[in-house]
Image (tube, rainbow, N blue to C red):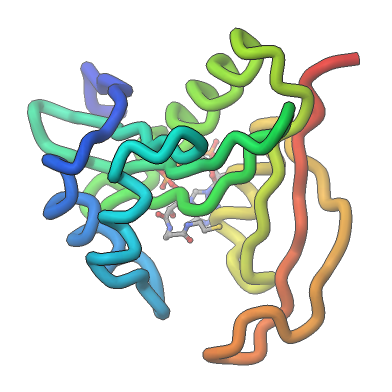
Amino acid sequence: MISPILIVPATIDNLDDIADIEQRCFSAPWDRSALAHELSALSWSRTFLAVANRTTAGFVCFWTVADEYQVLKVAVHPQFQKQGIGRLLIEHLKMTAEEEDISVISLELRHRNSAARNLYQSCGFSVVGTRRGYYTDTGDDAVLMNCLLLS
Ligand SMILES: CC(C)(COP(=O)(O)OP(=O)(O)OC[C@H]1O[C@@H](n2cnc3c(N)ncnc32)[C@H](O)[C@@H]1OP(=O)(O)O)[C@@H](O)C(=O)NCCC(=O)NCCS
């Protein structure tokens, strides 16, 4: 792993970096306006950045809905993948969730995305369901996963 990696809150000033990673990481990326909306100080939406040597290496974007975090996006720039940054982002999310008395973190992913599935499973997430044909660009199924935090 590269060090040190800082996990910091994102602002609208980070839009260019996030949009670049988004374009590189997803087959159906969100456009800049959708990303800007999430960064526009909505009370329910937050984004954390992973920063390596002043370079944005990845991000996680999530909503707080009642006592749940719903993860919208997790992405690590291809140049920084497989170096532990995705795990750091998810572990930071879990730590923040515990501090805020969140009971569950939920997310969905394409059923073929084995890298993401392995990451989430190794961070304590379990498969809780499937949505058939959820991704309209390819017809891929979505796998629903969650991580329970409170007993
Ligand atoms: C999924 C993603 C965020 C993982 O980020 P990363 O920084 O490369 O992951 P890490 O290095 O922290 O790896 C953590 C674990 O994830 C799994 N993993 C990561 N990349 C993997 C790959 N290419 N193949 C299989 N498993 C993989 C492994 O279990 C790994 O643990 P290990 O290193 O002990 O084997 C990254 O691949 C990515 O941005 N992909 C494109 C966007 C995306 O698919 N996001 C998720 C949408 S739900």
